[in-house]
Length: 161
Length: 214
Image (cartoon, rainbow over all chains, first blue to last red; front, side, top):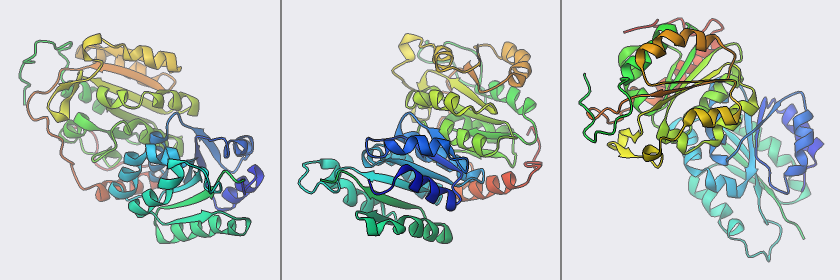
């Protein structure tokens, strides 16, 4: 995992995030204690990924600045909720998405295979963080999306050798 | 428009949707946010217009409670009431646990249970034949205040006290299905609603436009 818990928490705090909507996977999971203990924002646990986007929508409508964190399999699961929030309500919501097995190039994982085709099909502006040098892309993309009032995703490559 | 009798003969309640909603319209404070979905989005705007009403159409089914939870967390000084249907809640029962875990003391979930997927023409849900106890779900999830009504007079008589109790609250209202006029139409374009709600919430005294009643 490229970001440690303190690194991601610091980045989100600096970006002015107020709420982190959260359902962990095994790679993102170690961030939890730091996310929960960061006073700059509030961690909101959900039970299933389909809750995340309407919850983020409500927070945004209420004037907050939420970020959704989930694995790409959860993004697949929450597709209708994502569609509604981003394309019916037209809200500029932002997600940090764990790209399962992205760095395990030999992995026979359909989640890995469908990650980029699905996100491209939705047409959501995204960046892929697949190396240490890519880490600044997260904050840059978030700020770009906020400035342009566009939704956005930052994919975090998981599952290195 | 008066509802036709239930042609299936399986109706569990005589409470009309409009009667259930009128109680909330009478009691809602000027700064309360109301999120409607499904059949409530059809009926509520015919009874009441308010700057802090958000009619979640088009929606993601089961998304009304999470959306209202988001508003409640972002606006902790306001009360938020969300009107959801039984078919919608069944798609997303975990949201009850999320609401309690989030500690949204300013949120009231009103379940309008007609035992049907009404807006698609009245098909049964998987729960219809089994008298599923929705209040039991809410209690098990940890809602501190849970109540259930199948009678409009009892609901009217007790609603004010229940709404004043600590939240999050869950009220299960058993209503009769509408067998006519069930189609769901957006009451106004979503972009207008988003803009209206954001402006209303940005106003600290919020939602003083429109008032109650029709």
